[in-house]
Image (tube, rainbow, N blue to C red; front, side, top):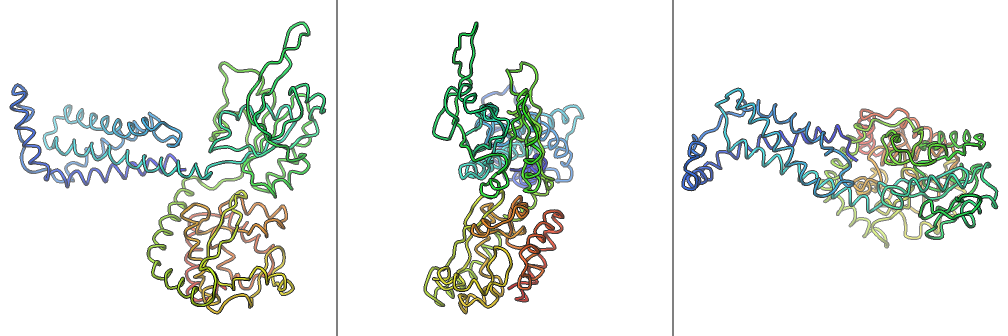
Length: 530
């Protein structure tokens, strides 16, 4: 998602670009201006003074800068006022298409007012109208492109957050009912719930729900006991698809290891025990996962005047709660990081296209088998994805692996041999200069990886992770990081590898990314990375 400040900067650049192009186009529009003026004189001669052709020249750009300085803040203020910087895939197409032209016309009106009040003579109607039209077109086009891109990303599940609910079953159902307006959709997926020690007994829960304990078996209509003078009447509470039970809160570390979770929501009974919450918070802290606390009292009844204060998330707008989140990297800096990833990756894919073709030919001629090899990797917050590399091993490499386990030079779940007999002759050369990793640039463009970030774990490796290793997947994995530039060929302790990834997470900055990229280029050029 583009942050508001970055979006404002983009709009300001678009307005400046429209200003410069309008100044260049205006002289080309004089014939059209004169034709319109002649036609208007024939149709409405009483307004002849407003349609007299002007001089065939335009003031220098420097003399019109005042117009840019007046219109730009006016347009940006209007866009901020009408919430044109909301998430574009959440607003209607009509609102998105009209926001740009509306702001542009308001900006033009402000400029016209300044011209009238100050009696400015050195200006051009053609320039002002052309500037306004180009500005409206630019603002609308960029929003349409971003909205289309966001819709495409949303359909792929890129923005979906996996929610794990923990707490008493009956309170958990209220929380899920509160999330209901957003679930299931492209934003949230409640993957399951963990039962806490203070849940109702099965008999009590059965009476509360009007049936057996819920599982994800399809639509369920929840009921609660209501009535007068002891006459029980079933009253519907909410209709939704109930999540499945994943276990007990005591198993949260195991659950977080084996399920991709972005946020844990703890539901508290007013008269229940809260001792289990501390363990859940501790597990979320170690894993770098957001934690949200939802007391039952905040879910009782419907409030007429009090609303949940926005904590910056969509879920926070719907569920009254208190949230604990990991120390996050600066949002604007992350936008710059993402923009850098996309621009550099696309530029590299284009620039190295001939090299891609050459390497693909070498791989094809060196040994039978496919050109590319796809690896099932674990991404941010446990989200799986497939990363592609040029194949550097013999086709039956996986079948040969069990016979080579005794030669493994790495501790922990990673398998690595310096002189791996499965690597082909061309593959050894590709690995020496890291050319086999070039196809991963496609994963960077998709958003599964970053240029710089912790090494992505394979699904097989991730199954053997210890819980403290999990924090490395709290950020997007990268193609290169400390483990690459500090000599991945001399590191044999997996825990040291993890510690370097955590060092990167704790000290991240754009400057650090730049330094790692520069050092990576030097390592690749020297052929010392493998």
